[in-house]
Image (tube, rainbow, N blue to C red; front, side):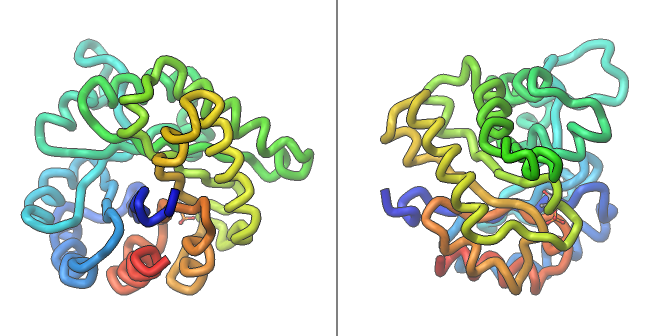
Length: 256
Ligand code: PEP
């Protein structure tokens, strides 16, 4: 399938950055720069910024996502936010399984699967993050690790639901480090993930899934990465906090 038919998606992951007032300012600055984008454009913002982000982005092509959700709908889970709560205020996307959640906050393949399940049940689109550590890459088990992460997260996800799943391949060693996978490395893993999806759901379904790359993608390296046949855009951390840089990445994906 022609990758432009899948439609690449550039999603910014702001992590724990920007206040509601700063959110409004950055979205107002970014909106005109990405207005003509020929790719999906998403900002995944901290929970307290969601309302400001939704209001600032209203009526534009910029969609809003959260960075995590809990798997229960409600209850005694102090500090957590459910997928249904996100959906109710107008959020459309949610990141699950980001490596920072896995390494710093105890997320496992199983809890990631629960979060993805809850997000899909609530009607959200999931951005599922998978990726190997440096040690795993050096041991040459990258594809095994990424296959296990993907397979467990998608257990119980139907072919119809797969249309609301974006997979972000993010090598842990490339996130926030300034190290980027080469375009060939990114494409090789993304192609492997698509192969796994074909085993699980058939080739046609696999061909329609957006598989991003993430890890120090920036205005300078985006064009080469997003030009790869199996790289359908990116999940962008640091560079999503600067309107001009983010817009340059969106432009590269629109043209890639
Ligand atoms: C991320 O947070 O998903 C990410 C890819 O970060 P960065 O672009 O800063 O490496």
